Amino acid sequence: MLAQCLKATAEAIRQAGAAIREGRLVAFPTETVYGLGADATDDKAVASIFEAKGRPRFNPLIVHVANLQEAEKHCVFNAEAERLARRFWPGGLTLVLPRREDTALSLLVSAGLDTVAVRVPAHETARALIKEAKRPLAAPSANPSGKVSPTRAAHVMEGLGEAPQLAFVLDGGACPLGLESTVIGFPQGIPTLLRPGAVARDEIEAVLGRPLADADAASGEEGRASPGQLESHYAPGSPIRLDAAEVAEDEVLLAFGPDAPKAKTSMNLSASGDLTEAAANLFAMLRALDAEAGGRRIAVMPIPMTGLGEAINDRLKRAAAPRD
Ligand code: TXA
Ligand code: MG
View (cartoon, helix red, strand yellow):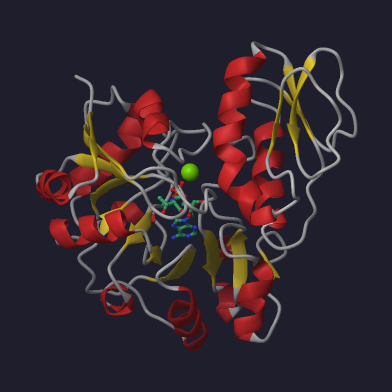
């Protein structure tokens, strides 16, 4: 049976909240991407997220809560984490922190680690759903494992509409940021960028007053890049060529900025060269070009590494990585 896709009215959110309490899955919009949500305190419900996504293994999941006080029930904040939470929550920042002994969260959300990833979403529908469900929501991006993250309800229906665990897709329109949250952890107490995302590195460094360490450079188990950061990820079906200065006859073009070369089939992430606009368009345009490419290669123009460019380039690199 196909999941029900409902406009995110108060009544739909009420029904969706009840479905969460019954252990079913609900896809919902956040300001970053659509999430596939379950009651984070229910082992079976959390397990069914992995089943629905077809995840190759249990990656740890982000737990979405209403506010900082709720987050403090589940994990232990250090002073820097608290500063970041106060500045960026609600919003596109995820903090990886030690689990509290007495948390009610399923062990499965941590996938065997002694940490938990938490975030307070800003999107009004996500906030209303957390409130209605009266539960913390475990939610990865609502796409089949390894595919491009969804930024529209229709993308979720395309990828997961037939998953029997999924009760509802709440349609809240296009996700305003369009890129997953930035993930920060504190291995050995050092603030570390585990995944670049919706909040740019320099904004976070400005609040901390020191540079973020990079995941790969950090030593030890905790400091590795987020376990979900598989090399090939966010992958469209068509091959991708990065840093393209010109377009070949048999390629379609993903352009950026005012000086795009002419191509028969092309889309521009931002004709004015605005990285925020480019982030919001990235996944939807990758999908649209992929659908039109019909096996042709997608040539992608270079994107600057400043601000959100770091996260955009990270996703593009993964989209272009060799597939298994
Ligand atoms: O914007 C987002 O973050 C979206 C929306 C729905 O909130 N969610 C999302 O979840 O992107 P997901 O599961 O696709 O990515 C979560 C990332 C993964 O890279 C995962 O490895 C990392 O967070 N993560 C989660 N828990 C972790 C932990 N305990 N330690 C290290 N990394 C963790
Ligand atoms: Mg994901």
